[in-house]
Length: 266
Image (cartoon, rainbow, N blue to C red; front, side, top):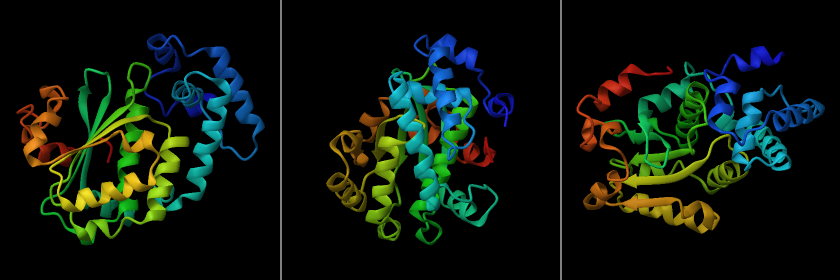
């Protein structure tokens, strides 16, 4: 597969990415691309993909190579998250019917792009599984990277509205699933999740976060911030008002139901 074909998936060209991030060097990209070609178990890797992993690895060639190796290894073995990623199949449709997930317009003051997620109303745990939900969220994030690029941003801020999250949802989240999640996002993910802000937290969510904090490395669980209903305003103050949906006291033109219905990617 030629680089032209691989690059065609990216809406932002490599030249544009390098123009917005001068630390990305063509010679480093060439070196990692050549290394990838020598690893016969790896699929073809685009120059944009290599540039992204260089950025995630603080522009260190050896770290980027390890990151890429981990990335494709995890995706091979974690089929519950990365298998059958067809938005028309039953598993993905189940997730889309259970949760809202979309990228908010614009960025935070720290130049982070924002993914907003919530349970659809009325929340129905029979339509929810943790693995299909994460698959849907991750597909949305990956489509945004392909669409918007990465050179001028500093990763992602996750904003999750936990209203309606109950025991039925919690029972679909196993310890083995959480361990998969941690290993991938720490050592193989093709994106940087800088923070996870959870609003409208209830006792069930607190129980889940306690479990996460008992298993996750400190670096990861320190990124998770919880806000009960009376503290939601303090959390939303982190975000520009004009990028938030109307339902979160944000932009009156961004209506949650309409944003969900439009479906930017599917």
